[in-house]
Image (cartoon, rainbow, N blue to C red; front, top):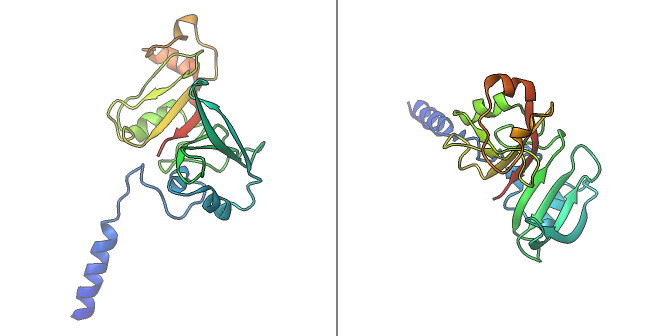
Length: 191
């Protein structure tokens, strides 16, 4: 009887495990959320083959200077990390734009389609026009990914009409969406 009680308690504890899309998976070293609390030294330990490059540069439209590092430069697994402090112990943001090993806990990576984003979000997303610094920026509209700390940028496979360029939220028709064939171009995670 005691064994049955212990098994029931263990089964209950396991079934309470969270599966929210913005909570990191503790297993995969290529889930960006898993890097959020790591220092530069800890990342070097977890990715010893990353051929890491380090420097300081201008970000946020050239208004902020941050130390940064690039993991796996010039490969499909290239990943950029900007640091919030000179000691490189607190991450400002993480970004990637190649369909390599990196992805978010929700499974988003470059190449994820517009339709897949809507499904993951559980609500229709909106997005900004093209041809400026935040081209194709996604708005989660209070969906599942609203509090995920993810900023995702879409790019069209086929060049859209001029009315789709600019700093405003687009309202394309289904036909226009199908023609553009939108996919994620860049993913930014800001812990």
